[in-house]
Image (cartoon, rainbow, N blue to C red):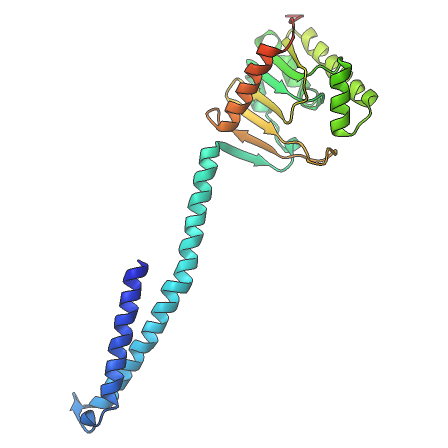
Length: 252
């Protein structure tokens, strides 16, 4: 379109200049055309074409170019978003409340460093599922002093505080087991770099951590099960299951 618009603008400009030349030529003086001075007619038409060509140039190569670029950028951004498989974004992970999904859940996979927040925040609906629900929890083995030291150093917290929170997590897990829910605890000998939860192997949620190892609201992504992020989570789950110790399920 740029080539066609440029040719049109040049053609209009050339015709306008020709008309203006003839309109100001002695040959056209005192000539009449349909009751109008022919030289004035040529000048007016030529001036109109000059104005039209300037407008054409500005519209096509300034305004429309910006407009088309905006459309192109949006198309590329939307395509990239579709390829990523991201369905929803939450600026604060606490804004995502998957209660309706958990009400009918049969499987729940949770990965974290040591926080019991997700289980604790949804404890009522999780325990209400009883034997209908199977949970797999993935986290570092914080009973291992080396792993505890690594985690504490990475997040800049005292080992005793981290261990205390880890004990709270295990207590919540015990409470869930007592309600009849099957729970598997999969421990790994390294620190995870993100948190996640997967409901029914269909709804994938990934939570980022902060660069500065500080307490803060963190963003959360919900992704489709065929997305690269869902594949990342599934690959990590399979790796941890293959490499880590497994605590046998109790209480259901």
